[in-house]
Picture 1 (cartoon, rainbow, N blue to C red):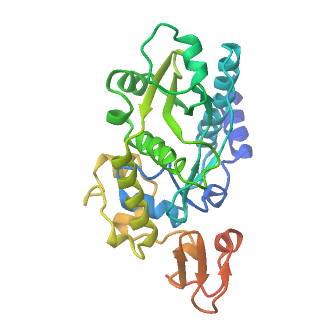
Picture 2: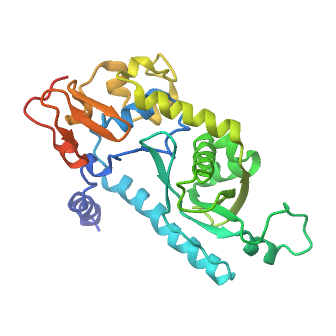
Picture 3: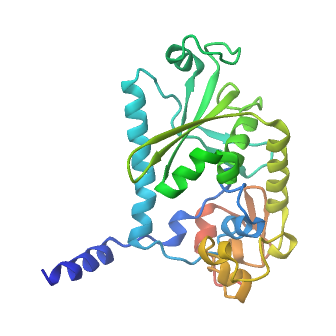
Length: 289
């Protein structure tokens, strides 16, 4: 009927997408570090974006979270127990951290792959988990070419977690491998990929994180393209307006000229105030850009 579309629009408007500040992370996320553009990571960490999350984008984020519960439920039906949901790992670089979807014991893999040639790991060895959704085209590309080729940000994320798990302060024993489980959103097909630890690559991501956290200006970092017409700038970055056209960023302490950070510790240079994440989001009347 004619009013159905109007009703849809009204419902989505009532839902809202949330204030962008609700999604600003206090830390530099391990899931961000493998991005195609260092400046994009800088802008995200510094909370430059003013983009509202419209209802559709909010649903996409919610679907990813909902799928995690389905994955865990299905694995449990197969007799595989998932431990450590959202275990938080901190790297040796203050402020660079992240949470994994969970981990399983290597014994679960041995149980289902008797007779297969497996790495010589003890049954108690841990395997990190990351659950991902993908549309049909992206799913097929990852299935054909693998995570490293098609999703370098996912690969970097897994390496960063595995490196952090080798620190004495880690909440778990070292993660021996990282298992990605993808679901095709179009037909519910699954794809599994086991990623081994690559120490050299992981340490390179640590150095990148260090550079981004230490940078005082985006101009200190490399951007993916000088033209705003580059497809990744147009389609994949919400900071293109700030980066290429000089638009004003969101108003908060992290985009203020008076703030300084040492990893996760932020300070106002005007009065020496230590800035909590809550204070940073609000800003003050002395804001200057």
